[in-house]
Image 1 (tube, rainbow, N blue to C red):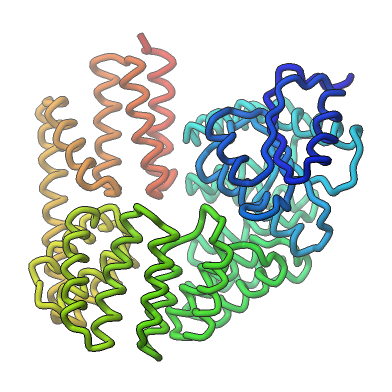
Image 2 (image 1 turned 90 degrees about the vertical axis):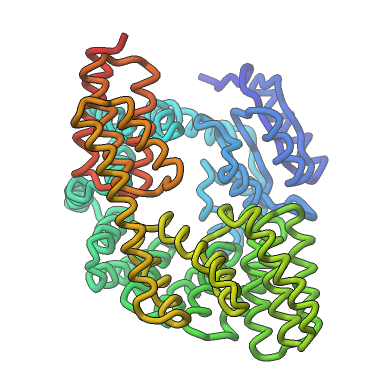
Amino acid sequence: MKLNLNSQHILVAEDQAVMRETLKHILYDMNAQRIVEAESGVNAIAAMRKNSFDIVLCDYNLGTGKNGQQVLEEAKHLKLLPFNAIFILVTSEQNPGMVLSAVDNKPDDYLIKPFNGQQLLNRLERCFMRKQALADIEIELDQGNLYQAIGNCEKLLAQNDKKMRMQLLKIRAELALKISDLKTAKAIYLDVLLERDLPWARLGLAIIAFMQADYEQAIDGLQDIILQFPMQLEAYDWLAKAHEATGNIQAALTALNQAIELSPQTILRQQQIALLADKAEQVDIANKAYRAAIKLGKHSVHKSSRDFSGLAKNLLKNNPNSNLLNLVSDLLEQFPNDPEARLRAATLESEIYGALGKNVLAQESYEKTVKLNEQFGQEAPRELRLEIAQACFKKGDTEVFDHIMQDLIKTNIDDKKFLETITQVCTTVMGENYAESLIHRVKQELVDINNNGVSLFKEGKIKEALGILEQAVGNLPNNQTIVLNITKIMLHDLKTSGSTMAKVQKAQAYINKAVQLGITHDKIGGLQTELARLASTKLK
């Protein structure tokens, strides 16, 4: 049966007018009625901001500005595509690097010109069937409900559709990884490999080894995947992570560079190379990667002011000169009205002027940094806040230094690696016991808040307990212990005082947050099961 597109809202993004007309005529033959045209990447994004599309046909080469790959990554990043939308990338490019770069962003399908109406119809039908089959899973994923997505995936698996089975097993295993249910994920991957030697199943086992800190096993598995399936780009990324975890930065850089050779248009890998090379003090490699990221980022949603500041800081080490101020100007031009960019620009100006001996201008820029930090500091990335704290210490502003450090410790108290970084910084500038004292003080404060909430709960003062812990979550949104305890108290409240839709939704939001924070399945899975039971039996 011929696919009828009568009710579908379709976007055609193509810079060539003749090709736009050709695509429209093909779509009209499928009874399409609602077609919007965009002749550039910027206009395609603008159209998606304005309307919700069911189908997007986007050319890879869109002339000046964003290409199709960048349109796709921005649409995904900004959540401009509904969960059931189909995005097909269209191109005349057959260069393997271009194709891999595009596929790296996971469009729903990929069409190489020239193609005819039947070929497009076949692709659309295939995508529609897949989207329809997975709709119940995608709806829950779109709302961040991983456990509900798992339940729906298992229902579909129980139907034993042989055509969908492998895809559903892949999804089920990936969802298990997301909730840190490694036992289930491993069992699925091993069962799949007994049937077929699929690279995604091998990759899954290597990821599990990484998550269990068995880095050598992960490295062996990933290297074997790359040897046998060299186009499996995710394997290079995980191999880099595994090498970095063992302290072998050079091997990590090698893995990422191999991926760059295959997929040269991926900005996120260039940014990762820059950061790793900086860590290893390989300045030339870092600068090359920063420049590549800046170039790729010109039209990308993933462009970062950090690339500009990283390059400027490295150049400042070897050759301080006034031309570096041009990089600051470029940074501000690329990121107008961006608080993070303004903070980075101010800190850079202070360093550059200081290196050039222009002390008055350096002081003015420093004062601007402090003022901007007061306004926007808590919105800034933690590595930037750490830089600002160090700059404040050098200027003798130990009170500001102390305040930033305390806040960084509070908001990252469960991140052991970052706390180690803070300890290193504090030890360098303040002595060995300073960081330990701060961390101990913050942890004790958190213990007191948590104990107070738990005590009120035990006294039967549920509302007061929730009030204290919710306030704590507002101030410390990433604290695992508080999020876990507030979830448990909410479930108790649901049991004793009755369930309402609002209460269930609130408890579910906290469970979803717990999963995002990395609280493992063995701690949160039972709470999710209990919430589902309460919602089904007691909901008013």
